[in-house]
Amino acid sequence: MKRIEDLHSIGFIHSDIKFENILIGKEDPDRIYLIDFGLSRSYENKGLHINCEELNVFSGNLLFASFNSCAGSSQSRRDDVESVLYLFLFLLNNCLPWKSGNYNDSQLKNKLNERAQNKALYIKKLYKDLNNGIFY
Image (tube, rainbow, N blue to C red; front, side, top):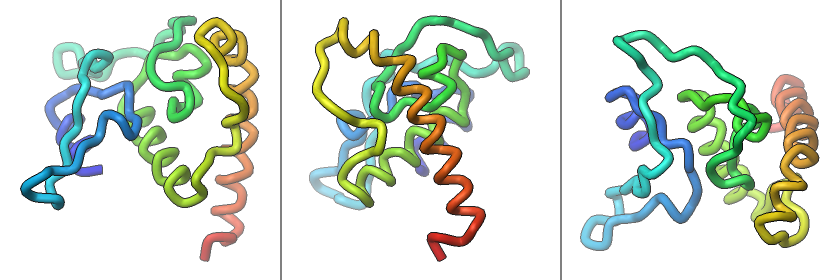
């Protein structure tokens, strides 16, 4: 989380948070590296937060992508944080509820809207469970 915070503090979002882009230091295992900034971009324009746009184009990793990203909205800091949450959920459960089957790229694109809807339903249930104290 600290590396994401560091990136956000200089005005950028990563937009592709996944296990493959997080490395642990060889000499110092307490040092965490964030790599692959190919989809990164600034979230500010002249010191102001950019406006949310409907992009209708998906980029990133579908499994850990935020709901807004799956729905085709432009990404912001919240989407990086949401992706980190999905990483933690995956570590906790060894799976994510919206992950089912293996698809090639064209099939994956066809499943995008369906998974975004499933993810939205799961997230609503998760928030409800958190509010009801299920994790206490």
